[in-house]
Image (cartoon, rainbow, N blue to C red; front, top):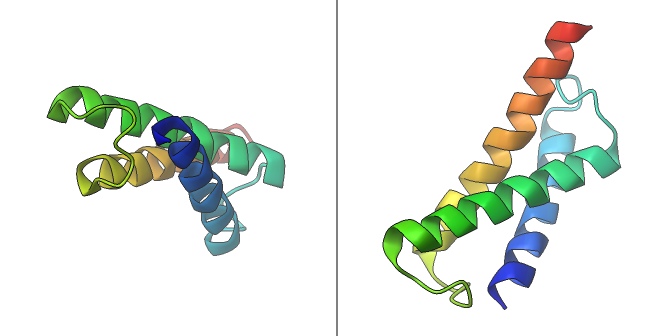
Length: 86
């Protein structure tokens, strides 16, 4: 349940990021969603390792918050990098 939950959470964060910052996020919807998923999975995995929770423990705030932060950081960083290249 944990990995699937993080993927869904990443899709939500990626969509929110694309809607909230349409000017800064120059990548398309697919890229925004994939970046959200990548960040959520990475953040959730790191939180599970740091707090000693299992990957299957999705309904735990100690993995939700880092998962959301990871998705925001990855999507935001990619947006900044793409903006500097243009």
